[in-house]
Image (cartoon, rainbow, N blue to C red):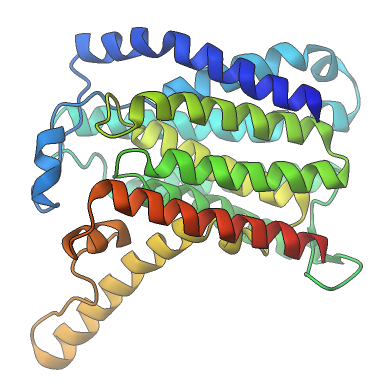
Length: 334
């Protein structure tokens, strides 16, 4: 555990040091955020802020993880190479996110990038491949469902594969929807990874503990530049990658049933979007005119329009997330 904490510090330092260079590169190539015209008016001042800041998190995590696991990666055992699973997911989803970010910068659909259904095909494709690989490789806890209060996990066989693919994609998009306020996604994801790092520690999965805390350190470094007012945004490059990786880590611990609790804020944000769409369609069909359940979705914008400042939303959401993450760890111990 002490080494994992050192790794978090190294990851933080490495990411902070190259942060200014990344910002200059993004500005040089004009990779700036385009704000939705139907979003809160207070966000219009953020137009042009460098996006794709998720590279600040992904690059240090990948470099540090590979450097520390060269011997294990060369090992012939599956356990030695199991770190490739979360690492591969992070890289794959960051590429999907980067393509979408670049599409948004080039003016497609008013800065929104590719259509959701186009992205979801790629996301499910990658997630399904990852789930099959995890199932075929005899990794610890893979294929199992741990239920709080039940001593032994339940082996659900190949039914685990579609569930795992859905969870990876859902987690990825939930974090993506949570991104949108300065500092929000970064601190929420860091809290969730810390919780699963503790769970992995209790299970003796040292390599997963180190990976989780390395990611936490990089997220903290990103927050150095993403704190209000943000100097850069995470973009889909970071949010899709971190969300998918969080879901993968949850699967590797076997404690994926508690993910909606550990990642309570992304779960609530994702549900707010689903409920908003369903309610709008239902009322349009029933009354001839669509009505909104929330003032605006995702959920964080609803509270902004209620009068909360951006900083208040971030800090209050983080407090709720911290309590939820602690409750999730407690359930994992039950």
